[in-house]
Length: 103
View 1 (cartoon, helix red, strand yellow):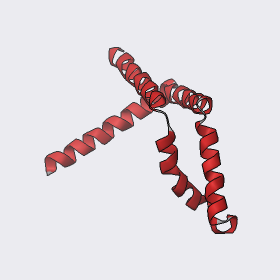
View 2 (tube, rainbow, N blue to C red):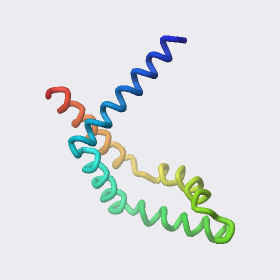
View 3 (cartoon, rainbow, N blue to C red):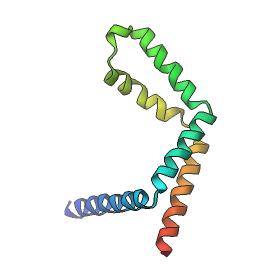
View 4 (cartoon, rainbow, N blue to C red):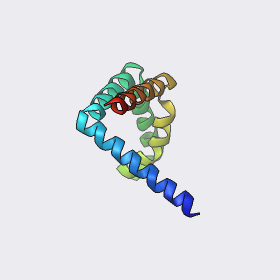
């Protein structure tokens, strides 16, 4: 069991290091901008907006809080992201990591 805990700790530390490097180099911001543009381009934003309106219409405006709406649409939002967009982001992250490994 200690081995699993050590592994989780190591993984968490590695993720934190990668995140810090992405922030320092500006790569995180570039990836966020790319993601925003791709999601708008593929219609994801419009689909999610329509879904939000439907949730509010179904439940009634007076019965929906922002937290409720976020909890309701988050799974749908993730589901609607096209595989191509996910793949492109993953490729960009892998390329970034490969570049960092050679530095």
